[in-house]
Structure formats: structure tokens, C-alpha cells
Amino acid sequence: MTAMPDLHLCRSASVLVVDDEPGMRQFLEKALGKHFGLVETAGSIDHAEALRQRCHFDLMILDVKLPGRSGIEWHEALKDPNRHSDVIFMTAYAELDTAIQALRVGAADFILKPFRLEQMMNAVMRVLKRRRLSRENFLLKREVRQFLEADNAMVGTSASMQRLENVLQRVAPTPSAVLIEGESGTGKDLVARALHQKSGREGPYVPVNCGAIAPDLLEAELFGHTKGAFTGANRARDGLFSYASGGTLFLDEIGELPLGMQAKLLRALEEKAVRPVGSEQEVKVDVRILAATNRKLDEEVKAGRFREDLYFRLNVLTLTLPPLRERSEDIPQLAHYFSRKLSQELGLEPIPFSHDDLQAMEKHPWTGNIRELKNFIERCILLGRLPLEDLRTQDQQASTGSGGGYPSCWPLEEVERKHILQVLAASENNKSAAARQLGIARKTLDRKLTAWEEQGVISPEASE
Image (cartoon, rainbow, N blue to C red; front, side):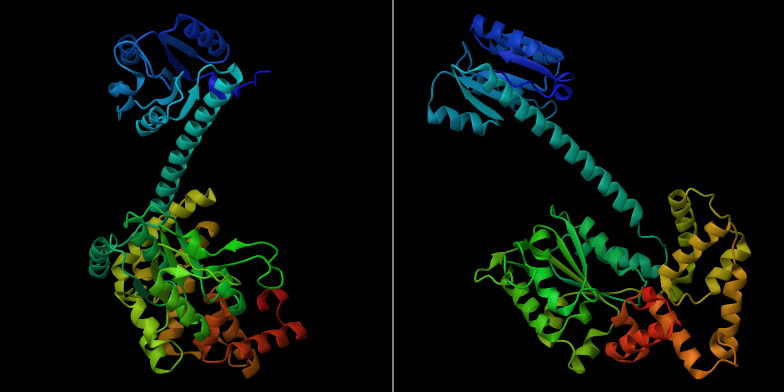
């Protein structure tokens, strides 16, 4: 019984059948005409070319042996870059050379005569499905590219931003590693994405936050693992290096890597290969490495917390992003950009900015950098107004040193708790980063959060 085709693929598709046998033409025209929007037939290449000039065909079913020119010699159709058609070749001669020639000129499939109608219909549907997937893939790539370009626009015309843009244009197409340094919230991920977008690499952009993954799971996350490599490894899994093959792997918070993992990463970078946990074999990978940190890695090397050889391997080129307070002339442009973008996302009206509003924002230190500014604009849109009094109060307290924002009646323990929670919130709950900024050990921070949760003074979510 002939398999029924996927009708939604057929109704809008056009097919051209080229065969010098009238019986074969009639047979295929009748069979395909039941399902396809347009079916034309021709007995020679010249007739087929005349039809092709009048109408574009999604699919051509083409006999190899034809009078005059063979189907493989129909160069006008097979090599037309502007009006591509998928081709299924038919032949009564099972010759290997003929099949190879057909594949070389771009055959989508190859069928031997005589054939059953079911064979032909299956071949036709495979070709149409591949064509549909190819179109969908193209559209998705375009949509993703447009989204990334819109979401990751490099905003700002200050001298520092212009210098950064010039370096990006020069460095992006190279395979060299780049180390991106800068305070938290300065846009290191944004720069990494821009480097990937401008690189021309066909593979994906894969970001990974090294400080957000438990140290004992980091190796398997990066390199993959075999089935049974450790408890819970119920199946083999590729690592992020493999997923990023042909593209870019962005190692954010690279300074959080344990020393043992640093050695394994160095080996992977030098050998251009990874060894999945539990495996004896290495897997070759083609990955461009970008790394970012808000630490000074040269100081971490001196302190013995970061391997010098890995630092030199990553530090082919260092891009240091300036904090927002050092390019305050970009703040009005950023404010307008975030207002437009966030109002669309939230479905609310954008906030109009007066000259005084923008001046107040330019004067604010923005210790959280671009991330803090973006959050402030979002809050403005949600409230429907600019809470500039909040900024002015903060700036006044900072300039007068009036208690750092804490009432003088607070006990020291309450000040400590408030300050730790503020730092934790500013670092987006990254406990390693918060502990480093506070100058305490990560275990100390965990212990304090657990104690406060048990006392009921903070919610369980705050200590997660």
C-alpha cells in the first residue's frame, strides 16, 4: 500500500518530471498530481529548461539517460544559484560511476528503475522534509542573529567605547584567546558575544559561569562523561567543549576555577582535545576560548591562587572594560536604549527623560555599572516615574559619609547582616563573588547565612 504523503508539505510544492518515456511521465504525473499543487512533465532537457524559465520548481524528478543531453549535463538547472531545486535522479542502469556523478552535481536522492510508487513517494517526502527543515533552520538562524544583535548592541560613543569597538573589529576574526577584565556589571558577556558574532565562526556561542558550578561537577560539565563514570551518570553526555565545537566557549568568572581544574583546562587548551570523565580516549575539539573575570588575574597569580601558565595561555590579549562612572557621557544614550527595549518587553510606556533627569543619572556613581542602570530604568518603567530622589539620597550619603545608609541606632550585627545581603544581591547571589568582595571565606558566608535562616531573620531563598 502506498504511504500517504504529508499533505501540508505537498499542496504548495511544485514538481517537474523529466523522462523520455511517455508511460513514465503519465504514471508520475497522475500519481503526484493527486497531492501536489503543480506537476509538469517534459521529454527532454530543452523542453524542461523552457518550463523552468517560466516557473520555479521545488523538486525535479529527472531521468539520467535522455536524448540529446543527459540529466546530469543539465547545468543550467543544477548550477543555478538563484533558483535552486532539489533533484531526484532516476536510472535503469545500476552503475556506480553514474551514481557518483549524480551525487557530485547535487542529487538529493537516486532511484533505480523499475521502482514501486511507494519508493518514489518516500523519496519525494524525504526531500521535501529536508527542504522544509533547511528553510526553518535558515529562518531561525536569522531570527536568533537579529535577536542577539538587538539585545547585545554595543551602546555608547565615548572615546573608551570607540577604542573597544576598534579592537573588537580587529581581533574578532582571529582564533586567539581573549581575556576580558572589568568590574561586575560592565558588560563582559556582552563583549564576548560581540566577539563571537563578528568572528564568522559557524558553531554556537556557549557561555558557562565557572563560579556557579560545584567544583566536583565542573570537569564533567566542561569535558563530558561516560556512562557510569560517577554516581548518577546514568548515560554518557557530551561536555560544553563539545557543544561549542566550531564556535566559541565563554568561560565567565574564570578566576573561580579550582587549581586542579585549572591544570586540566590548560591541557585541554594546549592539546585542543578533551578527555570525558571515565574515558581513556581524548576527543578533538575546535573551540575559540574567551574568558572573563572581575579579579586582577596577575595579582591572583602572585598570590598563588591562579596558575601562571594558564594565565599566559589565556592572556593573549586582555580587554579591560571601563566602569560606567568613567564613561558617564554614555549614560543618556544607555538610558534611552534601555527605556525603549524594556518598555517593549514589559508592555508599558517608556519613560521620558528631562535634561535634569539625565544630568542626575550622569552624576550618580553606578557602583553596579550597566546592570545597575538597567535595573533602575526597569524600576522607573514599572513605577511610571523616575525615583530620582533615591539616587540623590544615595549620592548625598556617599558624599557626606553619613552612616553609609544605616541608622546609628542599629547594632553592629544588624549592620553586618544588612551589608552582606546587599553585597550578595549586587553580585546576583553569586556567593563566591560576594565572599571575595566582602573579604571573607566562602564557608564563612555560608555559615552566616545558615545561622540567620535558622534564626528566622532571612528567608530560605536568601541563603540558597
